[in-house]
Image (tube, rainbow, N blue to C red):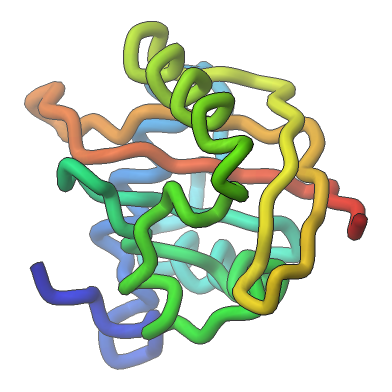
Length: 158
């Protein structure tokens, strides 16, 4: 599978994918990720530059990240190309991957989880705690599973 291009004016900051993220968030949580009046293109630009992290991964057997906003790229110390070639499981250290997998299984069954706290690791081995994260399933208009997304606004370096 080819990595998506980086968000830009030319591709409306991946508005179609961001629309999926927004609608899925609303579907599961009943809340808005952005002001409801925003078009997907406006929301995509807004979310790409938001001061909190937003990421998603695809549906491959070993899911790859397929979206990360600028904050997430900075926290994980990756470029867009590095992030979208990275299996999402590698965001957790080896001894913490089962905990992460359990969270994702729970989200797959329930639709979303709020208030998650866990340790993650960036590209250079820098560890950090994410706090009050929301993780949710991505489902399209036909209710077909398209991956999972996560957002968090609080992290602390270890």
